[in-house]
Image (cartoon, rainbow over all chains, first blue to last red; front, side, top):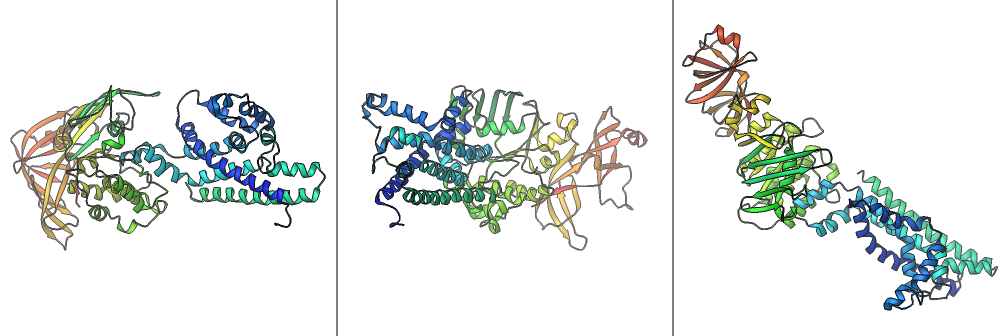
Length: 225
Length: 355
Protein backbone atom coordinates (compact mmCIF):
# COMPACT_ATOMS: atom_id res chain seq x y z
CA UNK A 1 0.00 0.00 0.00
CA UNK A 2 2.81 2.33 0.97
CA UNK A 3 4.37 2.05 -2.42
CA UNK A 4 1.02 2.61 -4.11
CA UNK A 5 0.05 5.83 -2.38
CA UNK A 6 2.10 8.98 -2.48
CA UNK A 7 3.15 10.64 0.74
CA UNK A 8 0.67 13.44 0.15
CA UNK A 9 -2.17 10.97 -0.27
CA UNK A 10 -1.19 9.10 2.89
CA UNK A 11 -1.12 12.39 4.72
CA UNK A 12 -4.58 13.23 3.41
CA UNK A 13 -5.96 9.83 4.47
CA UNK A 14 -4.39 10.14 7.89
CA UNK A 15 -5.84 13.63 8.30
CA UNK A 16 -9.26 12.39 7.19
CA UNK A 17 -9.24 9.56 9.73
CA UNK A 18 -8.05 11.92 12.44
CA UNK A 19 -10.79 14.42 11.59
CA UNK A 20 -13.43 11.69 11.56
CA UNK A 21 -12.27 10.29 14.90
CA UNK A 22 -12.13 13.65 16.71
CA UNK A 23 -15.47 14.74 15.24
CA UNK A 24 -17.14 11.46 16.17
CA UNK A 25 -15.94 11.49 19.77
CA UNK A 26 -17.05 15.10 20.26
CA UNK A 27 -20.26 14.40 18.40
CA UNK A 28 -21.11 11.54 20.77
CA UNK A 29 -20.66 13.87 23.74
CA UNK A 30 -23.17 16.26 22.19
CA UNK A 31 -25.51 13.64 20.74
CA UNK A 32 -26.11 11.45 23.80
CA UNK A 33 -27.76 14.16 25.90
CA UNK A 34 -29.42 15.76 22.87
CA UNK A 35 -30.87 12.44 21.67
CA UNK A 36 -32.05 11.65 25.20
CA UNK A 37 -33.79 14.98 25.44
CA UNK A 38 -35.38 14.54 21.98
CA UNK A 39 -36.50 11.01 22.85
CA UNK A 40 -38.09 11.89 26.19
CA UNK A 41 -39.08 15.56 26.05
CA UNK A 42 -42.76 16.44 25.86
CA UNK A 43 -42.08 20.06 24.97
CA UNK A 44 -44.46 21.00 22.20
CA UNK A 45 -41.84 22.83 20.15
CA UNK A 46 -39.49 19.87 20.23
CA UNK A 47 -40.15 19.38 16.52
CA UNK A 48 -38.32 22.65 15.80
CA UNK A 49 -35.13 21.25 17.31
CA UNK A 50 -35.67 17.94 15.48
CA UNK A 51 -36.00 19.79 12.17
CA UNK A 52 -32.81 21.75 12.84
CA UNK A 53 -30.92 18.56 13.67
CA UNK A 54 -32.15 17.01 10.40
CA UNK A 55 -31.28 20.07 8.30
CA UNK A 56 -27.76 18.92 7.26
CA UNK A 57 -29.40 15.86 5.65
CA UNK A 58 -31.08 17.96 2.98
CA UNK A 59 -28.98 21.10 2.74
CA UNK A 60 -26.34 21.20 -0.03
CA UNK A 61 -22.99 20.89 1.80
CA UNK A 62 -21.79 24.06 0.10
CA UNK A 63 -24.65 26.05 1.65
CA UNK A 64 -23.78 24.66 5.04
CA UNK A 65 -20.11 25.35 4.37
CA UNK A 66 -20.83 28.91 3.30
CA UNK A 67 -22.62 29.81 6.51
CA UNK A 68 -20.03 28.03 8.58
CA UNK A 69 -17.36 30.05 6.78
CA UNK A 70 -19.14 33.27 7.77
CA UNK A 71 -19.43 32.00 11.32
CA UNK A 72 -15.79 31.00 11.61
CA UNK A 73 -14.14 33.77 9.59
CA UNK A 74 -11.99 36.58 10.82
CA UNK A 75 -14.97 38.92 11.08
CA UNK A 76 -17.38 36.17 12.20
CA UNK A 77 -19.21 36.09 15.52
CA UNK A 78 -16.90 33.43 16.98
CA UNK A 79 -13.86 35.58 16.25
CA UNK A 80 -15.65 38.56 17.87
CA UNK A 81 -16.05 36.43 20.98
CA UNK A 82 -12.29 36.08 21.09
CA UNK A 83 -12.11 32.52 19.80
CA UNK A 84 -9.90 33.56 16.90
CA UNK A 85 -10.27 32.60 13.28
CA UNK A 86 -11.20 28.97 12.95
CA UNK A 87 -11.70 28.93 9.20
CA UNK A 88 -8.96 27.13 7.24
CA UNK A 89 -7.82 25.26 10.37
CA UNK A 90 -8.26 21.70 11.63
CA UNK A 91 -10.46 22.93 14.48
CA UNK A 92 -12.70 24.63 11.95
CA UNK A 93 -12.99 21.37 10.03
CA UNK A 94 -13.97 19.56 13.22
CA UNK A 95 -16.79 22.03 13.85
CA UNK A 96 -17.92 21.74 10.26
CA UNK A 97 -17.86 17.94 10.34
CA UNK A 98 -19.81 17.84 13.56
CA UNK A 99 -22.62 19.96 12.14
CA UNK A 100 -22.54 18.02 8.89
CA UNK A 101 -22.73 14.56 10.57
CA UNK A 102 -24.99 15.52 13.47
CA UNK A 103 -28.21 13.92 12.16
CA UNK A 104 -26.39 10.68 11.30
CA UNK A 105 -25.44 10.25 14.93
CA UNK A 106 -28.39 11.82 16.76
CA UNK A 107 -31.22 10.14 14.88
CA UNK A 108 -30.29 6.45 15.38
CA UNK A 109 -29.48 7.07 19.05
CA UNK A 110 -32.74 8.94 19.52
CA UNK A 111 -34.61 5.98 18.02
CA UNK A 112 -32.78 3.51 20.26
CA UNK A 113 -33.57 5.62 23.34
CA UNK A 114 -37.21 5.84 22.35
CA UNK A 115 -37.43 2.04 22.26
CA UNK A 116 -36.53 1.72 25.94
CA UNK A 117 -39.76 1.03 27.83
CA UNK A 118 -40.50 3.60 30.53
CA UNK A 119 -41.32 0.94 33.16
CA UNK A 120 -37.79 -0.45 32.86
CA UNK A 121 -36.46 2.95 33.88
CA UNK A 122 -39.14 3.27 36.53
CA UNK A 123 -38.05 -0.08 37.95
CA UNK A 124 -34.46 1.21 38.04
CA UNK A 125 -35.65 4.30 39.95
CA UNK A 126 -37.49 2.23 42.55
CA UNK A 127 -34.28 0.22 43.01
CA UNK A 128 -32.51 3.41 44.03
CA UNK A 129 -30.96 4.62 40.77
CA UNK A 130 -31.10 8.39 40.26
CA UNK A 131 -31.39 10.03 36.79
CA UNK A 132 -27.65 10.10 35.95
CA UNK A 133 -27.16 6.59 37.34
CA UNK A 134 -30.12 5.34 35.25
CA UNK A 135 -28.67 6.90 32.11
CA UNK A 136 -25.26 5.26 32.45
CA UNK A 137 -26.26 1.96 34.04
CA UNK A 138 -29.46 1.22 32.10
CA UNK A 139 -29.99 3.50 29.09
CA UNK A 140 -26.46 3.40 27.61
CA UNK A 141 -25.80 -0.35 28.08
CA UNK A 142 -29.26 -1.23 26.74
CA UNK A 143 -28.68 0.83 23.60
CA UNK A 144 -24.96 0.24 23.19
CA UNK A 145 -25.19 -1.50 19.79
CA UNK A 146 -27.32 1.40 18.54
CA UNK A 147 -24.86 3.97 19.89
CA UNK A 148 -21.90 2.15 18.33
CA UNK A 149 -23.65 1.88 15.01
CA UNK A 150 -24.53 5.60 15.12
CA UNK A 151 -20.91 6.47 15.92
CA UNK A 152 -19.66 4.35 13.02
CA UNK A 153 -22.16 5.99 10.72
CA UNK A 154 -21.03 9.45 11.83
CA UNK A 155 -17.40 8.45 11.35
CA UNK A 156 -18.04 7.08 7.86
CA UNK A 157 -20.09 10.10 6.86
CA UNK A 158 -17.31 12.45 7.94
CA UNK A 159 -14.84 10.49 5.79
CA UNK A 160 -16.92 11.32 2.74
CA UNK A 161 -17.19 15.02 3.45
CA UNK A 162 -16.31 17.27 0.55
CA UNK A 163 -18.39 20.38 0.08
CA UNK A 164 -18.23 21.66 3.64
CA UNK A 165 -14.48 21.06 3.85
CA UNK A 166 -13.90 22.79 0.58
CA UNK A 167 -15.74 25.89 1.79
CA UNK A 168 -14.29 26.22 5.28
CA UNK A 169 -10.99 24.36 5.06
CA UNK A 170 -9.74 24.95 1.60
CA UNK A 171 -6.99 22.70 0.44
CA UNK A 172 -3.93 23.05 2.68
CA UNK A 173 -1.93 19.80 2.55
CA UNK A 174 -1.27 18.38 6.00
CA UNK A 175 -3.69 20.80 7.61
CA UNK A 176 -7.01 20.79 5.85
CA UNK A 177 -6.52 18.66 2.73
CA UNK A 178 -8.69 15.59 3.33
CA UNK A 179 -8.83 12.50 1.09
CA UNK A 180 -11.90 13.53 -0.91
CA UNK A 181 -10.27 16.82 -1.84
CA UNK A 182 -6.93 15.18 -2.64
CA UNK A 183 -8.83 12.85 -4.95
CA UNK A 184 -10.54 15.80 -6.65
CA UNK A 185 -7.11 17.35 -7.20
CA UNK A 186 -5.81 14.14 -8.84
CA UNK A 187 -8.75 14.14 -11.23
CA UNK A 188 -8.35 17.87 -11.96
CA UNK A 189 -4.70 17.29 -12.82
CA UNK A 190 -5.66 14.21 -14.90
CA UNK A 191 -3.56 11.89 -12.71
CA UNK A 192 -5.96 8.94 -13.00
CA UNK A 193 -3.58 6.35 -11.56
CA UNK A 194 -3.24 8.28 -8.31
CA UNK A 195 -6.99 8.92 -8.34
CA UNK A 196 -7.66 5.17 -8.72
CA UNK A 197 -5.39 4.29 -5.84
CA UNK A 198 -6.84 6.86 -3.47
CA UNK A 199 -10.44 6.11 -4.47
CA UNK A 200 -9.97 2.37 -4.00
CA UNK A 201 -8.47 2.90 -0.54
CA UNK A 202 -11.42 5.07 0.48
CA UNK A 203 -13.83 2.52 -0.94
CA UNK A 204 -12.33 -0.26 1.17
CA UNK A 205 -12.41 1.84 4.35
CA UNK A 206 -16.04 2.83 3.74
CA UNK A 207 -17.06 -0.76 2.99
CA UNK A 208 -15.47 -2.06 6.19
CA UNK A 209 -17.28 0.62 8.18
CA UNK A 210 -20.64 -0.15 6.59
CA UNK A 211 -20.15 -3.86 7.22
CA UNK A 212 -19.55 -2.95 10.88
CA UNK A 213 -22.76 -0.89 11.07
CA UNK A 214 -24.93 -3.60 9.54
CA UNK A 215 -23.32 -6.37 11.58
CA UNK A 216 -24.08 -4.34 14.72
CA UNK A 217 -27.66 -3.77 13.58
CA UNK A 218 -28.09 -7.46 12.95
CA UNK A 219 -26.91 -8.16 16.49
CA UNK A 220 -29.46 -5.71 17.85
CA UNK A 221 -32.26 -7.47 16.00
CA UNK A 222 -30.79 -10.82 16.97
CA UNK A 223 -31.33 -9.92 20.62
CA UNK A 224 -35.02 -10.18 19.78
CA UNK A 225 -36.29 -7.27 21.82
CA UNK B 1 -49.38 4.54 57.73
CA UNK B 2 -49.51 5.81 54.15
CA UNK B 3 -51.79 8.79 53.61
CA UNK B 4 -52.63 9.75 50.02
CA UNK B 5 -54.88 12.64 49.14
CA UNK B 6 -55.38 14.77 46.08
CA UNK B 7 -56.49 14.98 42.50
CA UNK B 8 -54.87 13.50 39.40
CA UNK B 9 -55.73 14.89 35.99
CA UNK B 10 -54.77 13.14 32.76
CA UNK B 11 -55.91 13.64 29.18
CA UNK B 12 -58.41 10.79 29.21
CA UNK B 13 -59.19 10.39 32.89
CA UNK B 14 -59.07 12.04 36.26
CA UNK B 15 -59.08 10.62 39.72
CA UNK B 16 -59.78 11.95 43.19
CA UNK B 17 -57.74 9.99 45.68
CA UNK B 18 -58.33 9.95 49.38
CA UNK B 19 -57.09 6.94 51.25
CA UNK B 20 -55.08 5.80 54.20
CA UNK B 21 -53.27 2.47 54.14
CA UNK B 22 -51.75 0.72 57.10
CA UNK B 23 -48.12 -0.35 56.64
CA UNK B 24 -48.17 -3.62 58.48
CA UNK B 25 -48.46 -7.17 57.24
CA UNK B 26 -50.17 -7.42 53.85
CA UNK B 27 -52.57 -4.65 52.90
CA UNK B 28 -54.74 -5.57 49.95
CA UNK B 29 -56.23 -3.00 47.59
CA UNK B 30 -59.26 -4.20 45.68
CA UNK B 31 -61.78 -2.49 43.48
CA UNK B 32 -63.24 -2.46 39.99
CA UNK B 33 -60.98 -1.54 37.07
CA UNK B 34 -60.61 2.21 36.86
CA UNK B 35 -60.83 2.56 40.63
CA UNK B 36 -57.20 3.69 40.62
CA UNK B 37 -55.62 0.70 42.34
CA UNK B 38 -52.45 0.64 40.24
CA UNK B 39 -52.36 4.44 40.08
CA UNK B 40 -52.23 4.61 43.87
CA UNK B 41 -49.22 2.28 43.92
CA UNK B 42 -47.53 4.40 41.26
CA UNK B 43 -48.23 7.55 43.27
CA UNK B 44 -46.72 5.94 46.38
CA UNK B 45 -43.63 5.01 44.35
CA UNK B 46 -43.34 8.56 42.98
CA UNK B 47 -43.91 7.40 39.39
CA UNK B 48 -46.89 9.69 38.73
CA UNK B 49 -44.95 12.92 38.90
CA UNK B 50 -47.54 15.27 40.24
CA UNK B 51 -47.56 17.60 43.14
CA UNK B 52 -51.35 17.68 43.11
CA UNK B 53 -51.44 14.57 45.26
CA UNK B 54 -49.93 14.59 48.70
CA UNK B 55 -48.30 11.44 50.02
CA UNK B 56 -47.20 10.93 53.59
CA UNK B 57 -45.33 7.79 54.57
CA UNK B 58 -45.33 7.41 58.34
CA UNK B 59 -43.73 10.65 59.56
CA UNK B 60 -42.19 11.52 56.17
CA UNK B 61 -43.92 13.85 53.75
CA UNK B 62 -42.98 12.34 50.38
CA UNK B 63 -44.88 14.70 48.18
CA UNK B 64 -47.12 17.73 48.45
CA UNK B 65 -47.54 21.12 46.76
CA UNK B 66 -44.04 22.13 47.78
CA UNK B 67 -42.39 18.81 48.54
CA UNK B 68 -41.01 16.02 46.39
CA UNK B 69 -38.96 13.01 47.33
CA UNK B 70 -37.75 11.36 44.12
CA UNK B 71 -38.54 7.70 43.56
CA UNK B 72 -34.95 6.58 44.07
CA UNK B 73 -34.96 8.02 47.59
CA UNK B 74 -38.29 6.53 48.70
CA UNK B 75 -36.95 3.00 48.99
CA UNK B 76 -40.06 1.25 47.82
CA UNK B 77 -39.96 -2.15 46.16
CA UNK B 78 -42.19 -2.14 43.10
CA UNK B 79 -43.24 -5.28 41.27
CA UNK B 80 -45.81 -4.95 38.52
CA UNK B 81 -47.62 -7.31 36.20
CA UNK B 82 -44.60 -7.40 33.87
CA UNK B 83 -41.21 -8.17 35.37
CA UNK B 84 -39.34 -5.33 33.57
CA UNK B 85 -35.96 -6.94 34.10
CA UNK B 86 -32.88 -5.27 32.60
CA UNK B 87 -32.24 -7.13 29.33
CA UNK B 88 -28.54 -6.18 29.19
CA UNK B 89 -27.86 -7.97 32.48
CA UNK B 90 -28.25 -11.62 33.42
CA UNK B 91 -30.27 -12.69 36.46
CA UNK B 92 -27.33 -12.27 38.85
CA UNK B 93 -26.63 -8.86 37.29
CA UNK B 94 -30.22 -7.73 37.82
CA UNK B 95 -30.02 -8.71 41.48
CA UNK B 96 -26.60 -7.08 41.91
CA UNK B 97 -28.00 -3.86 40.40
CA UNK B 98 -30.47 -3.65 43.27
CA UNK B 99 -28.04 -4.83 45.92
CA UNK B 100 -25.40 -2.24 45.02
CA UNK B 101 -27.91 0.56 45.47
CA UNK B 102 -29.53 -0.73 48.65
CA UNK B 103 -28.98 1.65 51.52
CA UNK B 104 -28.11 -0.05 54.77
CA UNK B 105 -31.14 0.48 56.90
CA UNK B 106 -32.24 -0.40 60.37
CA UNK B 107 -34.95 -3.01 60.47
CA UNK B 108 -35.27 -4.70 57.13
CA UNK B 109 -32.05 -6.65 56.92
CA UNK B 110 -32.46 -8.80 53.88
CA UNK B 111 -30.29 -11.86 53.69
CA UNK B 112 -29.48 -12.37 50.02
CA UNK B 113 -29.07 -16.13 50.31
CA UNK B 114 -32.39 -16.41 52.06
CA UNK B 115 -34.18 -14.44 49.32
CA UNK B 116 -32.59 -16.63 46.66
CA UNK B 117 -33.66 -19.76 48.51
CA UNK B 118 -37.16 -18.47 49.27
CA UNK B 119 -37.87 -17.61 45.65
CA UNK B 120 -35.91 -20.54 44.15
CA UNK B 121 -33.66 -18.22 42.14
CA UNK B 122 -30.46 -20.26 42.62
CA UNK B 123 -30.70 -22.33 39.41
CA UNK B 124 -31.52 -19.20 37.39
CA UNK B 125 -28.59 -17.01 38.45
CA UNK B 126 -26.46 -17.46 35.33
CA UNK B 127 -29.33 -17.30 32.86
CA UNK B 128 -29.97 -14.38 30.59
CA UNK B 129 -33.27 -12.59 31.06
CA UNK B 130 -34.52 -13.75 27.65
CA UNK B 131 -34.22 -17.40 28.70
CA UNK B 132 -36.64 -17.07 31.63
CA UNK B 133 -40.29 -18.17 31.57
CA UNK B 134 -42.90 -15.61 32.63
CA UNK B 135 -43.17 -17.06 36.12
CA UNK B 136 -39.40 -17.26 36.58
CA UNK B 137 -38.96 -13.67 35.40
CA UNK B 138 -41.60 -12.54 37.88
CA UNK B 139 -39.79 -14.33 40.72
CA UNK B 140 -36.51 -12.66 39.72
CA UNK B 141 -38.33 -9.34 39.64
CA UNK B 142 -39.60 -9.92 43.20
CA UNK B 143 -36.12 -10.95 44.36
CA UNK B 144 -34.64 -7.85 42.73
CA UNK B 145 -37.14 -5.64 44.59
CA UNK B 146 -36.28 -7.39 47.88
CA UNK B 147 -32.54 -6.98 47.24
CA UNK B 148 -32.95 -3.21 47.37
CA UNK B 149 -34.14 -3.73 50.99
CA UNK B 150 -37.21 -1.53 50.61
CA UNK B 151 -39.21 -0.23 53.54
CA UNK B 152 -42.43 -1.28 51.83
CA UNK B 153 -43.07 -3.70 48.97
CA UNK B 154 -45.65 -2.64 46.37
CA UNK B 155 -47.10 -5.51 44.35
CA UNK B 156 -49.25 -4.53 41.38
CA UNK B 157 -51.18 -7.57 40.18
CA UNK B 158 -48.10 -9.80 40.15
CA UNK B 159 -50.28 -12.83 39.52
CA UNK B 160 -51.84 -11.64 36.28
CA UNK B 161 -49.68 -12.47 33.34
CA UNK B 162 -50.10 -13.44 29.75
CA UNK B 163 -49.30 -17.09 30.24
CA UNK B 164 -51.80 -19.46 31.82
CA UNK B 165 -50.65 -21.09 35.02
CA UNK B 166 -48.69 -18.00 36.01
CA UNK B 167 -50.83 -17.63 39.11
CA UNK B 168 -50.09 -21.13 40.38
CA UNK B 169 -46.41 -20.49 39.74
CA UNK B 170 -46.26 -17.32 41.79
CA UNK B 171 -48.89 -17.62 44.53
CA UNK B 172 -46.93 -20.06 46.75
CA UNK B 173 -43.95 -17.70 46.66
CA UNK B 174 -46.08 -14.74 47.68
CA UNK B 175 -47.37 -16.81 50.55
CA UNK B 176 -43.80 -17.57 51.64
CA UNK B 177 -42.97 -13.89 51.38
CA UNK B 178 -45.95 -13.03 53.55
CA UNK B 179 -44.99 -15.64 56.16
CA UNK B 180 -41.39 -14.40 56.24
CA UNK B 181 -42.70 -10.90 57.03
CA UNK B 182 -39.59 -8.92 56.04
CA UNK B 183 -41.46 -5.73 55.38
CA UNK B 184 -45.00 -4.48 54.95
CA UNK B 185 -46.58 -5.30 51.61
CA UNK B 186 -49.22 -3.34 49.70
CA UNK B 187 -50.83 -5.71 47.28
CA UNK B 188 -53.15 -4.75 44.42
CA UNK B 189 -55.38 -7.36 42.83
CA UNK B 190 -58.78 -7.61 41.22
CA UNK B 191 -59.10 -11.22 42.39
CA UNK B 192 -60.97 -11.59 45.68
CA UNK B 193 -59.92 -15.20 46.21
CA UNK B 194 -56.23 -14.27 46.05
CA UNK B 195 -56.88 -11.41 48.43
CA UNK B 196 -58.66 -13.65 50.93
CA UNK B 197 -55.66 -15.94 50.88
CA UNK B 198 -52.93 -13.32 51.17
CA UNK B 199 -54.10 -10.06 52.70
CA UNK B 200 -54.42 -9.18 56.36
CA UNK B 201 -56.02 -5.80 55.92
CA UNK B 202 -58.20 -4.95 52.98
CA UNK B 203 -59.14 -1.66 51.34
CA UNK B 204 -61.94 -1.55 48.79
CA UNK B 205 -61.68 1.37 46.41
CA UNK B 206 -64.20 2.91 44.08
CA UNK B 207 -63.14 5.86 41.91
CA UNK B 208 -60.07 6.54 44.01
CA UNK B 209 -61.93 6.59 47.28
CA UNK B 210 -62.04 4.03 50.04
CA UNK B 211 -65.56 2.70 50.39
CA UNK B 212 -64.77 -0.03 52.85
CA UNK B 213 -61.79 -1.19 54.80
CA UNK B 214 -61.03 -3.58 57.61
CA UNK B 215 -59.45 -6.92 58.36
CA UNK B 216 -59.84 -9.54 55.66
CA UNK B 217 -61.99 -11.72 57.89
CA UNK B 218 -64.37 -8.84 58.67
CA UNK B 219 -64.59 -7.64 55.08
CA UNK B 220 -65.45 -10.99 53.53
CA UNK B 221 -67.97 -11.73 56.29
CA UNK B 222 -69.74 -8.36 56.09
CA UNK B 223 -72.76 -9.34 54.00
CA UNK B 224 -73.99 -5.76 53.71
CA UNK B 225 -70.57 -4.39 52.74
CA UNK B 226 -69.40 -3.20 49.32
CA UNK B 227 -66.90 -6.04 48.93
CA UNK B 228 -69.51 -8.76 49.27
CA UNK B 229 -71.69 -7.01 46.68
CA UNK B 230 -68.86 -7.57 44.19
CA UNK B 231 -67.37 -10.76 45.49
CA UNK B 232 -68.60 -13.91 47.21
CA UNK B 233 -68.78 -13.86 50.98
CA UNK B 234 -66.33 -16.05 52.88
CA UNK B 235 -65.21 -17.06 56.30
CA UNK B 236 -61.46 -16.51 56.53
CA UNK B 237 -59.67 -18.22 59.41
CA UNK B 238 -56.16 -19.34 60.30
CA UNK B 239 -55.62 -23.05 60.80
CA UNK B 240 -52.84 -25.37 61.84
CA UNK B 241 -52.26 -28.97 60.76
CA UNK B 242 -52.86 -31.17 63.80
CA UNK B 243 -52.63 -34.58 62.18
CA UNK B 244 -51.77 -36.11 58.81
CA UNK B 245 -53.39 -39.10 57.15
CA UNK B 246 -50.93 -40.18 54.50
CA UNK B 247 -53.13 -43.02 53.19
CA UNK B 248 -56.00 -40.64 52.42
CA UNK B 249 -53.71 -37.77 51.39
CA UNK B 250 -55.57 -35.66 53.86
CA UNK B 251 -54.83 -33.60 56.94
CA UNK B 252 -56.82 -32.34 59.90
CA UNK B 253 -56.70 -28.60 60.38
CA UNK B 254 -57.41 -27.03 63.73
CA UNK B 255 -59.31 -23.82 63.10
CA UNK B 256 -61.39 -21.50 65.29
CA UNK B 257 -64.60 -22.96 63.81
CA UNK B 258 -63.53 -26.54 64.57
CA UNK B 259 -61.38 -29.34 63.23
CA UNK B 260 -61.59 -29.57 59.44
CA UNK B 261 -60.47 -32.30 57.08
CA UNK B 262 -58.64 -31.06 54.00
CA UNK B 263 -57.46 -33.21 51.14
CA UNK B 264 -53.92 -32.11 50.38
CA UNK B 265 -50.32 -32.51 51.43
CA UNK B 266 -48.95 -30.69 54.44
CA UNK B 267 -46.59 -31.23 57.33
CA UNK B 268 -47.93 -31.41 60.87
CA UNK B 269 -47.73 -28.04 62.60
CA UNK B 270 -47.93 -25.99 59.37
CA UNK B 271 -50.03 -22.85 59.61
CA UNK B 272 -52.49 -22.30 56.85
CA UNK B 273 -55.13 -19.80 55.93
CA UNK B 274 -58.51 -21.39 55.27
CA UNK B 275 -61.19 -19.67 53.20
CA UNK B 276 -64.69 -21.13 53.33
CA UNK B 277 -67.08 -19.61 50.82
CA UNK B 278 -70.53 -18.98 52.34
CA UNK B 279 -72.06 -20.62 49.27
CA UNK B 280 -70.18 -23.84 50.07
CA UNK B 281 -71.73 -24.10 53.52
CA UNK B 282 -75.05 -25.99 53.68
CA UNK B 283 -77.33 -26.39 56.69
CA UNK B 284 -78.86 -29.54 58.05
CA UNK B 285 -81.06 -30.16 61.08
CA UNK B 286 -79.48 -33.60 61.54
CA UNK B 287 -75.82 -34.60 61.45
CA UNK B 288 -75.07 -36.22 58.10
CA UNK B 289 -73.32 -39.51 58.51
CA UNK B 290 -73.80 -41.23 55.18
CA UNK B 291 -72.47 -38.49 52.96
CA UNK B 292 -69.39 -37.75 50.93
CA UNK B 293 -69.14 -34.40 52.68
CA UNK B 294 -66.24 -34.68 55.09
CA UNK B 295 -66.75 -31.65 57.25
CA UNK B 296 -69.86 -31.44 59.37
CA UNK B 297 -69.74 -29.00 62.28
CA UNK B 298 -72.31 -28.54 65.06
CA UNK B 299 -73.43 -24.90 65.07
CA UNK B 300 -76.04 -22.47 66.29
CA UNK B 301 -77.73 -19.78 64.22
CA UNK B 302 -76.64 -16.41 65.57
CA UNK B 303 -78.04 -13.98 63.03
CA UNK B 304 -80.11 -14.05 59.87
CA UNK B 305 -79.89 -11.54 57.02
CA UNK B 306 -82.35 -11.81 54.15
CA UNK B 307 -81.54 -10.30 50.83
CA UNK B 308 -83.94 -9.61 47.97
CA UNK B 309 -82.24 -11.86 45.41
CA UNK B 310 -83.52 -15.11 46.91
CA UNK B 311 -80.71 -15.79 49.31
CA UNK B 312 -80.43 -15.77 53.07
CA UNK B 313 -77.21 -15.21 54.98
CA UNK B 314 -76.80 -17.16 58.20
CA UNK B 315 -74.14 -16.27 60.74
CA UNK B 316 -73.45 -19.51 62.59
CA UNK B 317 -71.71 -19.87 65.87
CA UNK B 318 -69.31 -22.81 65.58
CA UNK B 319 -67.05 -23.64 68.46
CA UNK B 320 -67.30 -20.00 69.61
CA UNK B 321 -66.27 -18.54 66.25
CA UNK B 322 -68.48 -17.32 63.41
CA UNK B 323 -69.04 -19.24 60.20
CA UNK B 324 -71.01 -17.68 57.37
CA UNK B 325 -73.51 -19.72 55.35
CA UNK B 326 -75.58 -18.76 52.33
CA UNK B 327 -78.82 -20.72 51.77
CA UNK B 328 -81.72 -20.25 49.42
CA UNK B 329 -84.90 -18.59 50.73
CA UNK B 330 -86.76 -21.76 49.77
CA UNK B 331 -84.50 -23.99 51.89
CA UNK B 332 -84.60 -21.42 54.67
CA UNK B 333 -88.39 -21.65 54.87
CA UNK B 334 -88.55 -25.41 54.39
CA UNK B 335 -86.20 -25.96 57.33
CA UNK B 336 -88.04 -23.28 59.33
CA UNK B 337 -84.77 -21.85 60.58
CA UNK B 338 -84.67 -19.25 63.34
CA UNK B 339 -82.13 -17.48 65.51
CA UNK B 340 -80.87 -19.73 68.31
CA UNK B 341 -81.61 -22.98 66.45
CA UNK B 342 -79.01 -25.71 66.75
CA UNK B 343 -78.02 -26.95 63.27
CA UNK B 344 -75.16 -28.69 61.48
CA UNK B 345 -72.95 -26.83 59.01
CA UNK B 346 -71.88 -28.94 56.04
CA UNK B 347 -68.75 -27.68 54.32
CA UNK B 348 -68.54 -28.64 50.66
CA UNK B 349 -65.17 -27.11 49.98
CA UNK B 350 -62.28 -25.30 51.52
CA UNK B 351 -59.75 -23.12 49.84
CA UNK B 352 -56.50 -23.57 51.66
CA UNK B 353 -53.24 -21.88 50.99
CA UNK B 354 -50.18 -23.48 52.45
CA UNK B 355 -46.45 -22.87 52.09
